[in-house]
Amino acid sequence: QEQLVESGGGLVQAGGSLRLSCAASGGISSIGAMDWYRQAPAKQRELVAVIASGGGTRYADSVKGRFTISRDNAKKTVYLQMNSLKPEDTAVYYCHGLLTTRIGGAGEYWGQGTQVTVSS
Image (cartoon, rainbow, N blue to C red):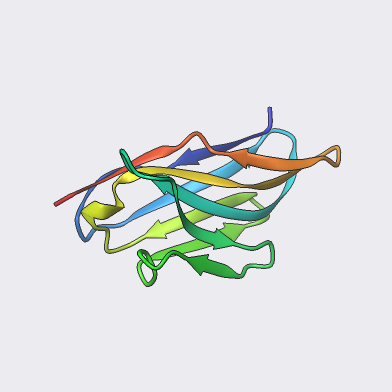
């Protein structure tokens, strides 16, 4: 079954780092434009970072200089390196993007979400 599987969330102290991974599994031939969202309790889902298929990136102002999105096309995986974490970064993080199947179809997929908690 085609899906995005996230890992790497957890509990970290303010100032610490985490790296989230999002791997396409099942019958996926390639990943296209990918992004990371986050959602904190009682808040709207926020777009955090975007990486185009060619590697260009964009970041929300709140994470610029601290987070880095990257991709490994051979592994069909996108990463979010999070440094200098703040309590305000606490949220469920979701990866999302366009996947192409081995039989030629394409569609948008969401990861299951991974909890990131930053303690003060």
